[in-house]
Image (spheres, rainbow, N blue to C red):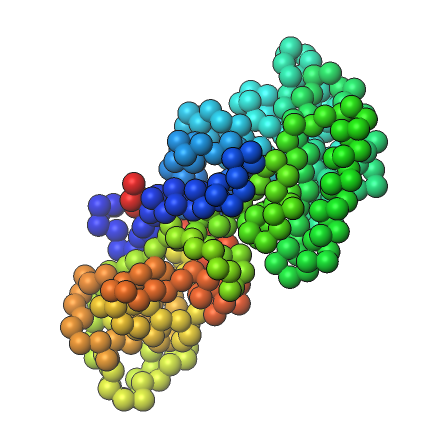
Length: 371
Ligand SMILES: *Cc1c(COP(=O)(O)O)cnc(C)c1O
């Protein structure tokens, strides 16, 4: 493959990662640690380059969803703490110890098993306890949390380094979110009073970091905003997106009035049109639901997608764009000549969230890093 000249590529600007990370630091202050989730290939941006940059920037923790992600980070030489944000099955615990990962615990069974395995190897296993204050995903039930944690303190080969919870509705339900914060506060306070000091308490995702300063505790877990994307519309905070998605025009043609374009002929030319083909499609993670809806930028001007997006290609209307050539770059996400096409906009149009737009980018979309 001619990787030096990819037909479609994602440009990832790591300078913008610096900018957004510093924006988080400014918001939360010096005393609050920052864990950055790098799960799902760093939201599609590339787990290794992003994690290395975050380590250099002074991130306190990285967050992953799977043990394999943690192993990949350790094998690449990442030395800072890595929290596995999800629970795992009992037979997955060995690499947690092998690679010095920090495990989320929310069941007695897993806690005891980790403690036993650590004792056998003469190790202490770091863990964070997940408390469910209203997400109903993983986590020990709030009502059971105190006695659960008390039991875990008796397991001498566990180091309980953190306790955390998660917000399901911080973008749209302040009443519920504030109640979660209150419950979590009450728990950590009670633990402290009973001599069970847990060094790190954390709750905030991006929207929590931005809208709920009372949820910062002493660590925050912003993902989306560190990638320069907004968890909600209308926020005044300035962030810089890392990702641009680009492709080079592979073919140009004139179609006559009445021609159907693409599978199913969902678009019929109402007049003679100039159509460009781009070598990018849903096989690259560009949502097929954007067929006949979204546009890209060519020469800084909007070129609407005509017909259905194919697996590897799509057709766009360049009738009104003056000089268009084969090989010319089209921007599907990002800036061109002062025009901006955001992942948030595409997400809205596709009926999804910006997270899904970036996470879906396929592995054949070459990532090119600006460092
Ligand atoms: C992914 C994740 C986050 C980050 O959420 P954003 O909305 O991207 O900021 C925070 N906490 C947990 C537990 C997560 O899994």
